[in-house]
Amino acid sequence: MKNVKTILVIEDEPDIRELIHFNLNKFDYNVQLASNGEKGLKEARASEPDLILLDLMLPGIQGIDVCRLIKSDPNLQNIPIIILSALGQEEDIVKGLDAGADDYVSKPFSLDILNARIKTVLRRYTKKEDENLNKKISFKGIDISSRTRDVKIDGKSILLTYTEFQILHLL
Ligand code: CA
Image: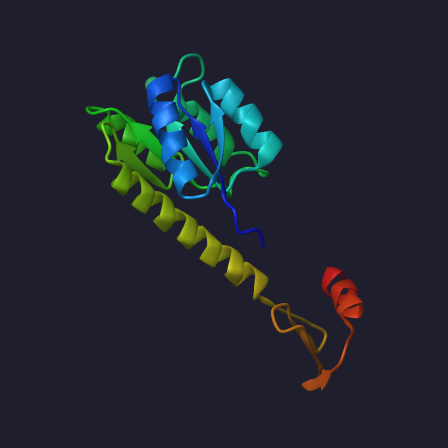
């Protein structure tokens, strides 16, 4: 699993974009920037980031629609989204959460809060990924645990090489 997380920032205001960029760099995230929804979607498809910070008020495609498009795309829907919204956009925040956004931060935001939310969402998703990796597969008396690479046939453990295991796991 890669350790450096990639965060895509979709934000049209250059000052805010740069502030977030500078801030995220301090925490060793790999940062990608997009100045509108169209570029953001393109970037998301190209680099499949670990998290997206999405401004709601964007020129062209609105943030809310970007959120919907990402969450309805099988290749992208597992990427967590944190919405950046201006004050007085409660209705849009609700729409964003309905559309699958994971959290939101209201502008003007404190960087500490933004960082805490990012950390929490990433932690939640990393845990989910780990659970998926650890899942056990069972069929026809064969039990496979993908974490321990333990294979049992009718309850008896058998030893497999790494390659054998990978092949069986793929099957
Ligand atoms: Ca904006």
